[in-house]
Image (cartoon, rainbow, N blue to C red; front, side):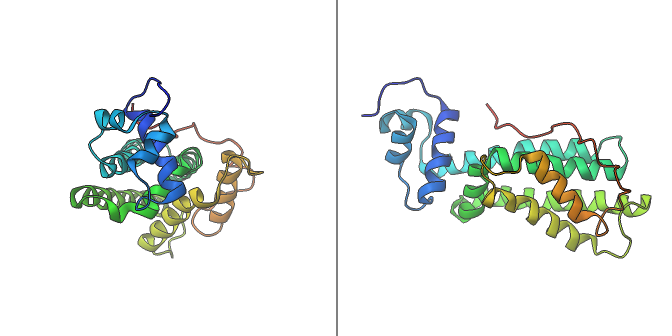
Length: 212
């Protein structure tokens, strides 16, 4: 028996993300999740029916808020360069704040149910299409190089931003704002034509928060 404590689905999801990150989804058990959350295994079953359902909720809590944030950025009134910066900022802050969720998603997406995997793949394709559209706008506005392959660039940028969760730790010498600045340096002269000093002010914090 775990020690008695108040619990809910969200606390179990957070515990599962930590357990899956440490042990891997295949080797983790619901008993491990219960111990991490400080509850009994029967208590876990009161909230979720299976280990796979916990994995699916972890993935949903990554993709759905990010989708909403991306839509707000892509459809926003700002110029293309400002929206590209906001897009980078959103991904950096999300990947650094919820690195365990991202690592579980990257390592164990193949363990999803067929329907869960389809939803994830549909989302990933939509993210790439959204960024491609944003880069196309940048080309039209003269802030993105016209000689790039937009599809390739979108895949490269999204892969790079997602990979931040693999190596970032809260005690790193760089905070999320510093990482965002480094990403924008990489994009200078490659994707986005930035005049010196024009990126001094970061965009609003659009980091996602797991659904309650």
